[in-house]
Image 1 (cartoon, rainbow, N blue to C red):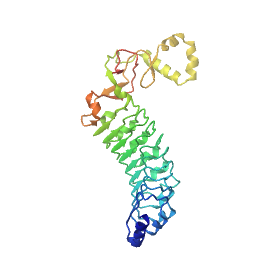
Image 2 (cartoon, rainbow, N blue to C red; image 1 turned 180 degrees about the vertical axis):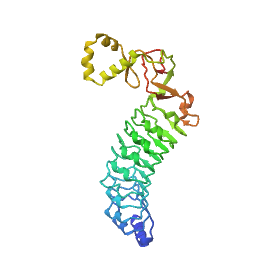
Image 3 (cartoon, rainbow, N blue to C red; image 1 turned 90 degrees about the horizontal axis):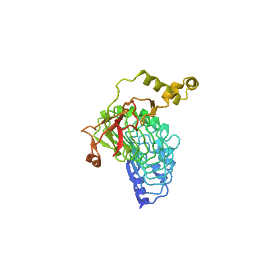
Image 4 (tube, rainbow, N blue to C red; image 1 turned 30 degrees about the horizontal axis):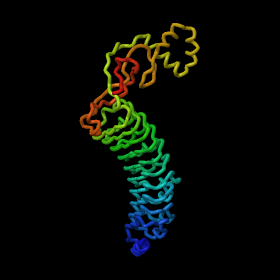
Length: 347
């Protein structure tokens, strides 16, 4: 059947625009495809192809290529010759690397689907995909993403679900056109402040991470949909407190400076403080903020504030059953041992 389809395509010559050879159990890409220079769409998903043939480099008019569910182990170098390519599907392979130069000629690529592969990293060269609008790398093994990815100024949708990400680079603020960001089931502990600069962001899904606190300005995002279940923040609720003082004393200011400098191993202060037993006694009573980790002495000041999400945000159905408050860092301090703190407590 595959042979008949190829013969028919070859008979069409330059007029052949579409070739579909899905699920034909092919173990290699037909080299005769190089004889179809006018080809626009090539579908080869659900086969057993381990690598692409060199002849594919002749398909300079190709705009859509689907090699999903094959046996590829890398994003092929031959891709750089497909200068007209706009959509590239490589999902469901065994890809664990990008071949050198694979991104070089893909200046017109709009969509790249790398779901269900074995990638542990994305090369810096991804920044050469200047027209990229949709990038999906779900179900891989990414531990980080390069800052260069954040310079794809046309990127509108970024999907990084089910990876091993710990953090998102601060440079994400440069993705000014980003409208949809999916980060489900990673190991992200906090979101960068730059996220709050994404004024066009409409959909944010951070479900299943370990986020406890959000950056300043998060409540000002113009989201339409926000999904956040499975984060430890939402197993807790605010406990209101009364501030003891609104103004720090000179003793508090000095103590904080000394304690934080000692924590940073300031050798001069470490030696000097040996001559002042009263100071040593005073700072021995110091405490550490449960959120930012910095030291303070006696004044209870909030490190966080709680904000209700915007009424325009669509949130997870199970979170609509309880009053939801977003924990926003305000760079002050509190200690989780005090009973009258504006902090967090288990439900």
